[in-house]
Image (cartoon, rainbow, N blue to C red; front, side):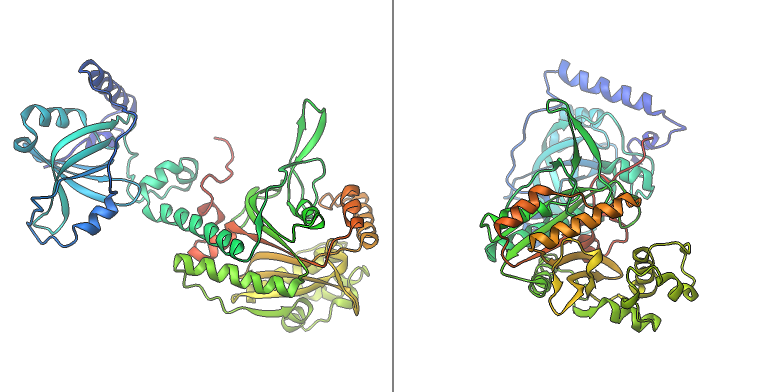
Amino acid sequence: MQNKEQAATDQNTAPIEQIMQQRKQKAKDFVKMGINPYPAQYKYEKNIAVLQQEFAYLEKEQMAENAHIKAAGRVMTYRNMGKAAFLDIRDGYAKIQIYVRADKLGAEQYKLFKDMVDLSDIVAVEGMPFRTKTNELSIMVEKWQMLTKAFRPLPEKWHGLKDIETRYRQRYLDLIANNEVKDVFIKRGHIISAIRHKLEELNFVEVETPVLQSLAGGANARPFTTHHNALDIDLFLRIAPELFLKRLVVGGMDRVFEIGRNFRNEGIDKNHNPEFTMMELYQAYADYNDMMDITETLIKTAAEKIGSQVNLNFRRAKLFDLIKEHTGLELLPYVETGKMYGVVKHLNLDLPENAPDKKVLDQIFDEKVVPHLTEPTFVMDYPAVYSPLSKVKFDNPEIAERFELYIRGMEIANAYSELNDPELQKLRFTQQMEAKKKGDDEVMPFDEDFIFALEQGLPPTGGLGIGIDRLVMILTGVESIREVITFPAMRPE
């Protein structure tokens, strides 16, 4: 017994160019025989996973003689045994073994199959289901058809493909080689679907807002810039849909959400990709406490949909209480005083002495608090000065009604009681412009049209953004954002 095309996976025995030339010739030979090696369709009723379930009752060496089934898939293994061959084919759901024999197909069709079918080809078969001596459900092939003649063989050591560069650049090979990769993307689809359906149950309306924007607002981030030739203006890929969604609430759409791509011209690491998916929602007559409730509901719904066992016992804690708990320092009085570094320098943070207070606060939180946020934690009540779109507490205007949700030490969501005072929002935008003059290139622009919209009257509103990619990471248990994005950003080869 010999694995067919063993030489095809050994670059020292058969160069890839030679293998491809042989396969291209086979495609031409099919055409000469009047056979289309790339037919437009193939109809069958049941995928392989359904067939596996339907004939699970068969015992060893038992054949379902009255059943005649069809299956189609990619040839994954090929074991040639002279006048017979065993192959595994896999569709998008499961794999099944097929058994090809000369006495069942006929000598002519068997020779054609043996000569023309290679690993990675996509074929269709018809025949009777049976179970082998080794208790494997198989199909006794009585008829076959070439559906796609593959020119390239599967790569060397394709089974369990591990090379990161190959996996991410050629995701199709990753999906062929690693079933668990496909499973993550299927679960991702179910997570998004579960969130969407739950929001619809809660009377939210799904909307779409511009991806190309004349102002990159809604978050503090560096945007991607492009140019529109017809209008002769620069435009930005959106960093957030927030300001457009709140305009819709002003217009009377009390519950809106959008699931879509955002773009930020920033670094790439295990938690960041420049193109990522966000779910943002806005609810009139609600505040950030309501947003915490709905966040719990959405995440628990998504987890239940895919059967995730991640800990979802949420707790709520204030930012400065957490900092004091893990450093012993009371830092709120030092926000924007220029003195924060001096108070915390004994903590040996990786920061220069002239670091602005916001950078110092962020670093303390990242280094001293985040590693302890293993259970789901709503971190509440951020400094108002660092939350330009958030409403402040009426009895404590230094504090914004804002939270960020952390799970397993990773930020998953961000939410506010939305600022709806146009004069205060105008002041916040002005402060952002002052910060920009001092060199901060991630501040929000002054959006005059948004101020105009607020002057029409925005009702009390709660807003929430959930990072879909990171949520999928948490619920599926993977460690890198590249594992949950089908085609992550890569440096060109």
